[in-house]
Picture 1 (spheres, rainbow, N blue to C red):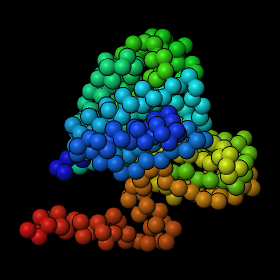
Picture 2: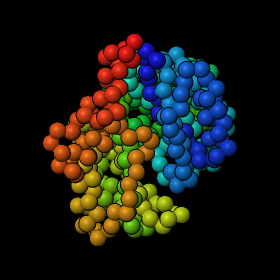
Picture 3: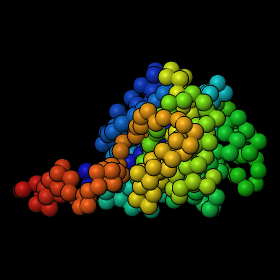
Picture 4: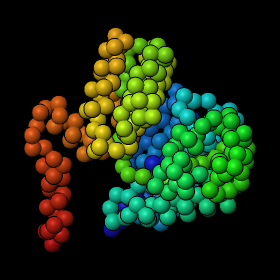
Length: 306
């Protein structure tokens, strides 16, 4: 594949039957390849990661969005993750031989087509944002789906595409372009959501925490624990070990044990290498010194030995 775009759509569902049908649209699209998907009932959210060339990614995403709009009714949706629509957010990410500008154009084509086909209002965010405040998902999601009808009619909140009113069942959609980010969740050995929220606040960049970090707290009922869910939008500027060390300090402050962690979606290799180098005190570890990457680079340089 000469060009690679990654797309990581988030859908407001955890219904296995709905998940299967959404993924079916992706699997039926030529040159689009599923990498990973996760869903759970406490966030009530499906996160998918897939790749392809520009055309195949756009085609697959439009098919998946159409299916989600047909199957998901936001009027009955409840979940701990902020959201404004059935197809909540759709980022396009440049991976290989694709520029950020290419991904901005993809987001605009996706948003315009979705709005015209389904009457869903669409906001552009990230690198595709038309105004500075719209770069931020939190600003767009203020009030969530429940207050969308009230918020969307404000002049400063007019959608970039589609009508200034929510779709009756699908709400609104956010799309844009961004760099690869790290989704990182840490489980706390306490059911106390108030304490977890205090820890999340200490990490969140706009609430006095670390740059490039968004953090929220959620309760996981089947395990009777809480979780700090984080998005590290620039893990090179704010490495994961720095985030984790601050989280340890804040958890210790409330005498709360850390009982586990996980990546939400796929783990960026650079982020894993940084964590490994820090905790093992390795001076010369870089991505290029990972065996599999060194082999891949050698093959690419030599044209697979042809």
